[in-house]
Image 1: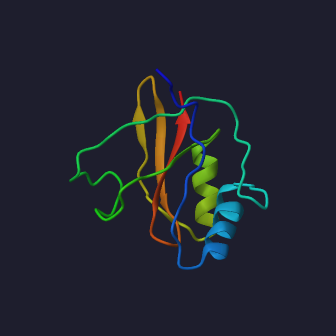
Image 2 (image 1 turned 135 degrees about the horizontal axis):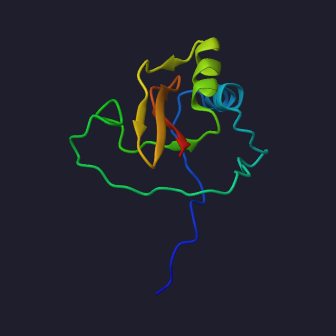
Length: 117
């Protein structure tokens, strides 16, 4: 059986694509080239499905949520707050998995941040 090798891209609709790209660059440090290519650090990627009525993604109209691995969750959340980002106050610790926090981008997309254990 042929299998996928990994995530090849994540595409987001935006009313102002340039501004949203700048937000991801300036707030999350997501440096992409002129084609949108980003060389991420190696590490695990989780693929999980959720019930259709989950509130985990924030708004029920959001069908998917991207999860970014971070080195230091507290530092990343402080950085986002300093830039005026909409950061959820609570974090979640999952034993053996890591710590989680959330931010909403300027287009209303909830993003999960994960500091692996």
